[in-house]
Each structure stands twice: as C-alpha cells, then as structure tokens.
Length: 232
Image 1 (cartoon, one colour):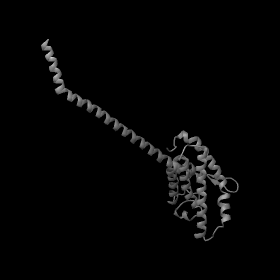
Image 2 (cartoon, rainbow, N blue to C red):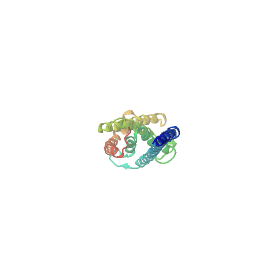
Image 3 (cartoon, rainbow, N blue to C red):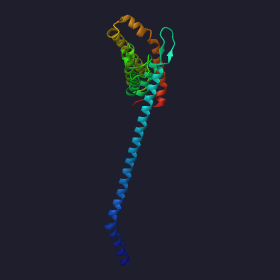
Image 4 (spheres, rainbow, N blue to C red):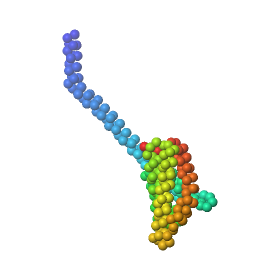
C-alpha cells in the first residue's frame, strides 16, 4: 500500500514537473493558432466583400454611363419642344449610385464625348465645349452630384427624393443658361436676350424634364429598397 502511494506521488510529481508546462504551452498555442486563423479568415472575408463591392460599383457606373449615352438618342416627340432621356438617366445615376459614383458616371460620359465619340446629341469632340448647349452637360455632372447628395443624406422618403431630383434639375438649367449666354456673348458674338434665353432655354424645355423628375422619384422610391443601393 505504501509502495502504491509512493508511486502515485511520483507520477503526480513527474506530471507537474515535466509534462504540465508542455501541455499548457500546447493548449495556449492551439488557442492562439485558432485565434490567428479566425483573424485570417475574417480578413479574407473583408477582402472578398470589398472586392465584390468594388466590382459592383464599376459595373453600375459603366451601366449608367451607357444609359446616359443611349438617352441622348431617345427623343420624346412632344409638341413645341421635344426632349431626350439624358436628364432622366443622369438624375437616376445620382439617385441609385449616390453623389460620387453618380457624378462619376455622368463625367465619364462627358469625357468620352469630348474625346471624340459621338455620344452627345449633336455628335462629339473637344470643339463641343464651344457649343452653347455644352453648359447643360456640365450641369448634368453637378446635378447628379447634388441629387445623390440629397437623396443619400438621410432616410429614403418621397420628400427627400423630390428635393434631390428637383435640386438637380435647377442646377442643370442654371448652369445651362449661364453657359449659353456666355458662349453667345464671348464666342458667337451674337448675345441672346435674357427674356429670349429664359423662354427657349427654360420655359419651353423644362416641362418634359419635370415629368422625368417625377418618374425618377417613382423609380427611386420603388427600386432603391429592393436593390439595396442606399448609401449608409
């Protein structure tokens, strides 16, 4: 019995002295390795998500650039002043993509036109900057930015969508008319009167774009929650 008790003490002493530290280290190493693996997997997941989001943003930006290009050639034949769907797609770019990506999609469209591609209503090329209507193209970029900024600055409501779309409309026409007046004075040397400018460049042209604003609000209200494109 004494011998058995002595052997038990010896085994316990041997375990505490020699084996316990190594088992402890192995246990800690296992935990550390498991923790490190979790971090690695988390980082991989974050990288995959970021890559997917970046790819989605590139695809959507290119898609809206293509839609804006197509919109320049889709003419709605209404009496007095026919209009195209350019403004619809530049506004929707801001609504769906937000201020930065929306403005980027519109800016890429303008750059492609200035580079010589016939994407504008009247063609393309760097000389287009001397066209009186080029100011509206500048306004499209600013309008997309303003629309996106307002729409994505808070909760999605009809009032916010209306404010964003009509603010973008105001920017487009303000820059368009100022540029038209400037080119007529400085380049064409045939100044257009303020009354005539307001009549032809705003009063007769804006009704169609007001309808497009309302259509943009309806599409944004219905599709933004479904597509999950609302910025945080």
